[in-house]
Image (cartoon, rainbow, N blue to C red; front, side, top):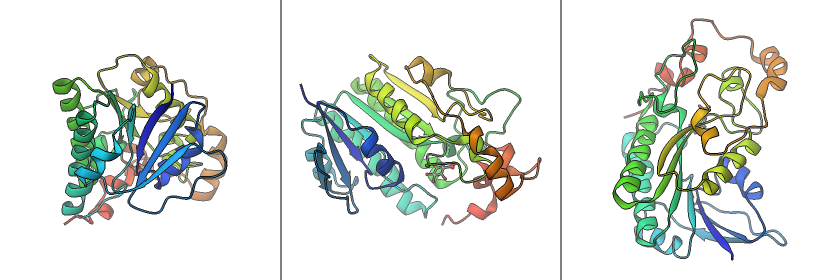
Length: 269
Ligand code: 15L
């Protein structure tokens, strides 16, 4: 039987990295974005949709015949409150509501480390389900994403997993990302685990690779079947040579959200 997975925000950074990695025999990827999606390549089993996650009718149609939703759509950086509210918070409600209306059983939500960015790094790994301490309006929206996921799971019985993604790029871009990096291949492994694990109910997991310098727990992710195969340590020498070590008492190495806790990110109005 063919499996159909809807990916919102499929033209974004993580969506673009996941498109080839989540391709599988017997699977159709229904890719949705407000922006332009590259055309299907030869043999690629994709359906392309142009729509906004804030459009309920479009999302209802997009969820028809779908087995699972991976919701990556939304702003990925700090924005004025009204934009965060509309796209990230209202948009996530729209996606979950469309999933519920269509009987979609499983939704994976892109949360972020910035939902808990003001947690100080301690001697122990920051635990799973660390209480929200958002560092920005963007972080607040990810807390709302998690809350909406919990509501739709507890009230309507959907399986919902929110991933507090660290930094998902081809390679770490600074010293903090040696701790927060989620390699694209590990991200795909994590998403596959989220799709496959039986009856998870509502979960929140940290989305990072098993980095030597990791500072968040992977226990809950592992309990869902995630097995990281990457470690940012192979980039450490190069990244430290390029950027230098940050101040030992500065935000970069002392808060989960790094410099997002500083006034440099006070763009919000
Ligand atoms: C995020 O949530 C952002 O979407 C991404 O652009 C990165 O900046 C990442 O967090 C991070 O903390 O490195």
